[in-house]
Image 1 (cartoon, helix red, strand yellow):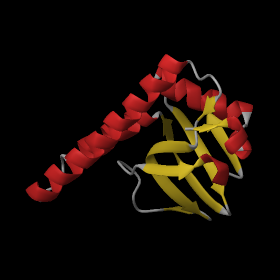
Image 2 (cartoon, rainbow, N blue to C red; image 1 turned 180 degrees about the horizontal axis):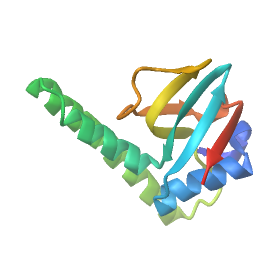
Image 3 (cartoon, rainbow, N blue to C red; image 1 turned 90 degrees about the vertical axis):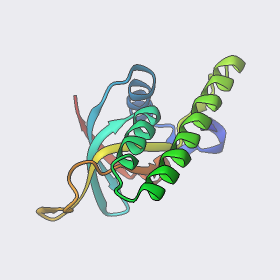
Length: 137
């Protein structure tokens, strides 16, 4: 999270509303993003859903050592996110805006083809990198 004055390019009212719906209300929204000529499509989810999905995906890794390490690291990241959000709410900092966007089932689209990874692909990107977007409610 960043203060609005630190990241003015993410101050798009529609994007912030969509991010609030996913983060605060748990809504999932189909979205297509244009980023420097690249098109990424997926389902917009909140950070909590993103971390939970990564943790669940880590649990499917066959190598037990890697599975344990990934589960621990992403659980730590999720807990740090939750702690940060709780501190923000306690301080009542209403001037905070999201700086990252999270997608599940993400796919890169080029011409008429999509990337081979169509499901269970988790994607995270900087909001200030987005040139445009479309969404379906």
